[in-house]
Image (cartoon, protein in one colour):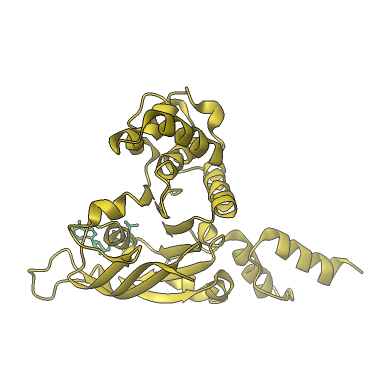
Amino acid sequence: MDKILSLKNVNYTYTPDQPDSRYAVKDVTIEAFDGEWLAIVGHNGSGKSTLARLMNGLLFPQEGTVHIFGLAMNEKNIWEIRSRLGMVFQNPDNQFVGATVQDDVAFALENNGVPYEDMVKRVEHALQLVKMEQFVDHEPHHLSGGQKQRVAIAGALALHPKLLILDEATSMLDPQGREEVLQTVRELRETTGLTVISITHDLEEAMSADRIIVMNDGQKYAEGIPREIFSSGNKLTELGLDLPFSLKMTHLLRQEGVQLMDEHMTEEELVNDLWTSHFNN
Ligand SMILES: Nc1ncnc2c1ncn2[C@@H]1O[C@H](COP(=O)(O)OP(=O)(O)OP(=O)(O)O)[C@@H](O)[C@H]1O
């Protein structure tokens, strides 16, 4: 598989002039491959936002390299890189510039000089992908949190990005809004094969990813498929991460002496295991 993004031995400190300066990101190597969903998780202060800024060129590492779309990121090619990179941030209310949903999704296209007819088609298609086409004329501020983030995703998609980075994009949403956004990302992956990097402190969100990187104190702590990462449940709790409900329940049941076959990633798996082993006789 082709590499879309790679960070190699990256160091970043916000206070480079201070002796003993603390590294926000320390010797981090990360690769993201074409078409995958990579989740980067970690507690507050573990370096996630700094990584997001290093990935979109808001920051440049003091040491190490960042390659994206086959280019070594530098101050000259950053605008070209950003035009192929969709970013969705934490606060849905800070992301709107248009008076209607349609204007908002069109905004970046207008700025990029996309011809009118092409723009109309792209806006329509992007809103269809996030299932917000019936809201074209609505005012963004009247939408729910989940709907706002779906419109923000449509704005990013309209630019036809090769990579979508979600930086804590679900953390201000209620459970329903969060599920709406995650479902949107899951469907997008199926319909478009888009590469997604989601940066989050929410392990429930990371469970849907193909691969997870766990950050701790600016360093890469672990890397693997969700099942591998979640098999180290207690260690994740020690890092200040909140385990998904099905895993917490699995651990609590085990503590009470209930025999279970596996670490259960979903409530459905857990219920099936309980049903098969304990009630189905
Ligand atoms: N602008 C800044 N100036 C100085 N230090 C900073 C700045 N931004 C972050 N830091 C420090 O860098 C370290 C990593 O922070 P970062 O924001 O990347 O972590 P995070 O995992 O995204 O946490 P959070 O979810 O709280 O934003 C922390 O120790 C933080 O205090």
